Amino acid sequence: MKTIELGTKRYRVAECWSELTPEQYRQLIMCPRLPADGSYETLDNEAAACRVWLGMSPKVWQRLELAHWQWGQLRQVFNWLFTTRPEGKPPIDVLNHRGGNYFLPEAYYMNTTAAELAVANMAYIEFAQPIDEHSPDDVKAKHEALDRLVATLCRPRRADWRAFKASREWNGDIREPFRETSMLERAKMLSTLPLADKLLVLDYFERSNNEFLDEYGELFGSDGQPRYGDGRGWLMLLKNVAKQGHFGDFDKVCQQPAHLLFAALLDDMLDQQQAQKEADKQAMRHDH
Image (cartoon, rainbow, N blue to C red; front, side, top):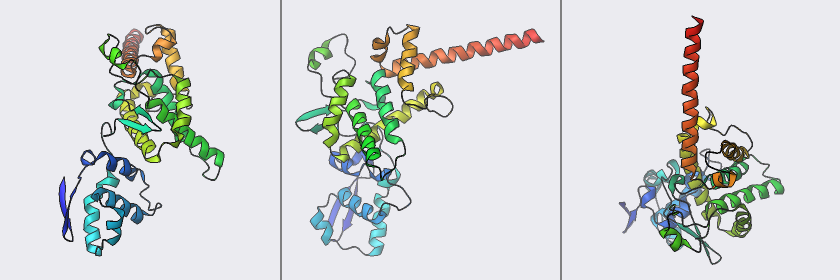
């Protein structure tokens, strides 16, 4: 934290994302996502972010008068909001909406199953597709995809969580098991969730997903993208794993921890690559 003086008052301000209050984090998470080309009225966005960062009320902010050189110095101090991304899990563990609590997954998919990882990526791929901003259908589809992403990752606490936590099946996840039908119903209800909360989940997903793809990138090709252009390729991958029988049928494969499943896939692929190298060496020796 850092202390700055504005007029006769002093303000304790954050110097990184982890020092922000949960509400500041929630309101400011959009900052690093804004284009750097100035197309989003940068000065207005900076002013709004500065007020939240200072913890200043709108009325006090309106009365604040700063010289150009003071504003320039202030911008240098809070510029990190626009140039850095948070790390790890947000300081908000649960979203509250219409009387319900929806828990976020642990950082880096540590309690995420293969099924929800696949469905979340399918929703994200649809959300990230370029659209015609003037087409109501395209805009609606984009919002619905984001709602499905949020509903996939953020789920209510399971009714038997205490007994589950004490059982041998405990996997560190208090959320109710992922089911697509429940997710689709929940997505409709979460459509009215504040945009700030949706963006918080989106940012968290993107950072977790990028780390996951970096770790298992060899499974997805040299560009780190799924081998299928269609997001359904994630489910096809799980179906192929089920055909091998190592983890059981498709339903059992879907319930496997994502890291366990993909670590096994990566290990198998590396074994196959090593075996192919040895076979190529033997073939070259034979030719000579």
